[in-house]
Length: 91
Image (cartoon, rainbow, N blue to C red):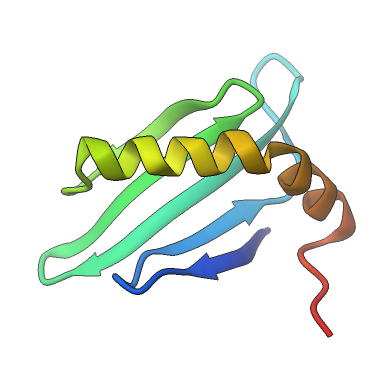
């Protein structure tokens, strides 16, 4: 399951997964950034807790990717909390 997090002015949409198990049986969460383009999508996906990029396609700049990485790093405790709660609860 993927849950919405936010959408930026450049149309980049951010979603995060519920807690999953990787091949080693460890709990992981995926945070996915995606922006529509004329050719399809720019996409980058991070994995928590490793903070590694596990998928990248398109034309996000290195500066954008660094900004996304900071969002993932600073938001990690919240992504875990919201994943356990089934997404962000907004009034």
